[in-house]
Image 1 (cartoon, protein in one colour):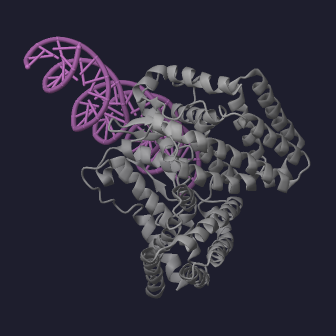
Image 2 (cartoon, rainbow over the protein chains, first blue to last red):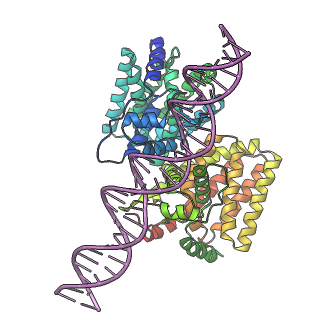
Image 3 (cartoon, helix red, strand yellow):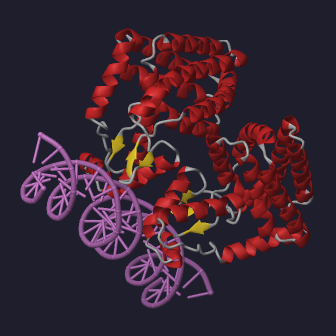
Length: 245
Length: 245
DNA sequence: GTCCGAAAAGTGAGATCACACTTTGCAAGA
DNA sequence: TCTTGCAAAGTGTGATCTCACTTTTCGGAC
């Protein structure tokens, strides 16, 4: 199972660096491009090291480079992309072990805080959406569908944090996922990672149902801690592979 | 004293919306504009409600609108600016009472964390810089120099958080100051605010000297808590004055 | 004196182009 | 066959222009 998840995204992603956006007519283009890239980064559809070219994207999306440039610069500001090398091309950044540890600590603090509040505030309608995302994740694991898993992994967490009703807090958490998201695709290749993670998700789901703030915080914290540990072992290999200069 | 601080910035700021940037030759323009606006926002040199025009700034700085637009959009992403009204003009956002409370809680958590680490890690050379910023703040209070105070208030906190050696954490804190910075100028008009705040600063300075992590966290937390309380009383007035639509 | 409406001025957004720079690729020479 | 060097292609950046839209202004009608 792990081998499946580990191999497929690498191949498909390197071939099509970016799945075309369905541009709705009438609305602003720049905001759409930004929102779409943000979503794609957070859910882990782009691999670390992947490069993005303004002209290439402009041709794909059928718009000029201007709005794309602005969108990518915004994401660069948030750490979701970086400008790389003497050629100064945009790419998805790799992460250092130190930075991973730092983000882990912040995430435990902030996502833990959000989970606590969510446990107290969540209402049945939202609870059903969370449960639905959980079911889809479990189905994705069974069907060995990496894309489906990643999409609903982000959706699961996002729905929980939304319930805390703290937009600024949610914004910061999203910004951290922007940095961490691309790594999840690497993590799910690690043996046992998915089982561990789904354990945490199930515990979080139960805690939310029981409105148990402490349990919710702990479940989220454990998920983050274990994922960081799994990633730490992978980082050395990929850092040399996609090596920064 | 408070009256002085409260009145002058309002008048001067409305006349010259943005003090010209000294553009260094040879380096990238967009990055400079972004960095300068970021600094100006964090230190509180721009007032909430103040409007910024691309063409006007372009004329002032002697460059085209393109890099300015990108810089302002970046700041909009971070919440430091907003697009306002049907005319869609950039301006410094006002803050709601709910958002202020939210940011207060996050700041206490994150800046408290950074202060703890700083207390353990800070070295004599950095300690001298912090003490220097503190002295300048005290001198600014005596001389009733709002600009000098604001500049060194941000510098004081920034130097402390830098000592924690957590770049990502520092980035998030800066982003919160981007949102909060413009309000400090309003807060220092409140009677007793400066004395309260300088008390906290002195306590923080002492805690850092003693490498007392708990005391450092508490000093910073108290500063944030009291500033938020002072601001809360002012918000209702200014919200109706600069009112959002 | 007041009010209405059209013209003028001002706003950001997106397309296009010239520029400086780096990387790539290929051909000529050793 | 290998190396060297130059041209071609590719990169992001900033300037300029047009467009759609909103706000302001000011003159004429009532």
